[in-house]
Length: 194
Image 1 (tube, rainbow, N blue to C red):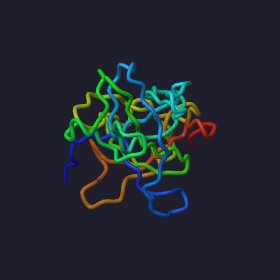
Image 2 (cartoon, rainbow, N blue to C red; image 1 turned 135 degrees about the vertical axis):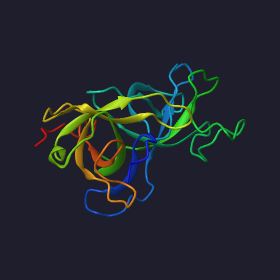
Image 3 (cartoon, one colour; image 1 turned 30 degrees about the vertical axis):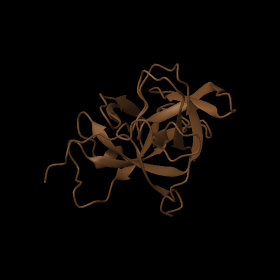
């Protein structure tokens, strides 16, 4: 069976202790002047500032740099619902914004995410290595995946590869989905891969 090529960024699935992800996250602001689109599934980093309400800001994370978490909801209303009431079909923060946006971000460093690989297929022997994010083209959902060519033991790489996502529609090979932990996290020091 071939894996489906459908990048959608990082999706939270469970905690390191085995408990299912409970939908929790924290609210962060996206400044109206920030000229990059942000999507559900995108990894974000602290912007170093806040909005006028004192809500800390986020920007798109970078490969090899510390990450604050992953967007799971986005809109123009401060504490949700995470929609744009002026355009209910807009499920992301566009590059050109006239108002601040607000994102629900899974910023717990103990959350495991599912993400698709990009490039030459990863193998069983790659479990335990670290890798960076690959930033592909997004349309309405995140275009972020695992940059397979970056896999190494390097502590500053974005993610730790934990294992193949256990689903009937997922097997080793091109476009496989993997469970990962954010390794280079703002709330945790990155650690060497094994």
